[in-house]
View 1 (tube, rainbow, N blue to C red):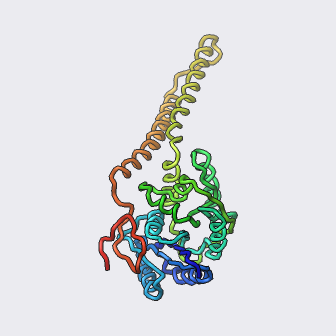
View 2: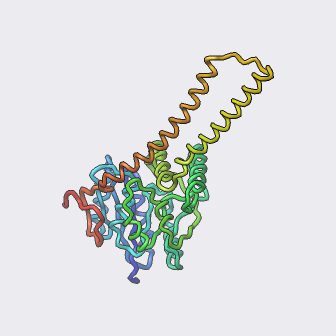
View 3: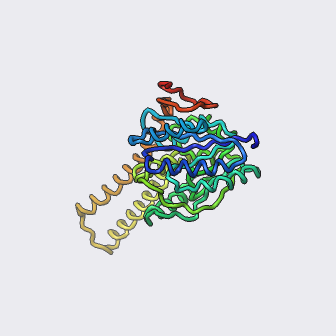
Length: 324
């Protein structure tokens, strides 16, 4: 066995129904590799037996480690914590729901050994998802790519392998509203992809309901594009032109008696409400950016670890509240 070390980061949130099956598939793949490995489970404030089951896995295998958050900090922070503590030459990120196949890891490692610093899984199909979710995801990824200056690949999630130096560069980024896949694209380095078909969840319920999906989408847009702020300029210019043309039409109509126009309350209210709606939309967009600035300047830690299980070769940026 060579001296290469692989770190597998697996965020967990209420995954008691799938964690044992996930662990079996992960270890089967990792045992087939020519190198040493570790699995870092990150319990993101689970309220079921996920933490207990993960702790049992750690006690049966010293290569398995567990970080437990003091509360639910979110999927992106859980990924970040795992990478902060990973000591491998290559770090692989994968969710516990088994929608992303662990059997693809050897192909990722082969691409990494061939020279790529980042190898991400590209979803060519998504099974077990509604047509509405597929359509919204497809439109969002393409919109994000169009309005940002960073080349963020479409139809790609967090399932990927990154080199240790990419992991170190990512850990140095202090952003709180994290969009990890976008940050990795922003870092640059040599990146490639492997196509795969995303499977349905093995068990349990999705941990990304509509509310969290919308937040993640907003994090992606506001972290990598200021074009929504420029939207107000375009709308303002467009409405000004329309208003001028309408004024010109009214003037010509009055001058030549082409149209008999009676003053009306309804039409006046429609115009007022339309313009007020535009103003409120732009204020909402500005508020999103200001809210994110507010989060950044507070300087709070990304996550708080209340417990660790196993021996970590690398310590993360945040200290544990208690060490058991």
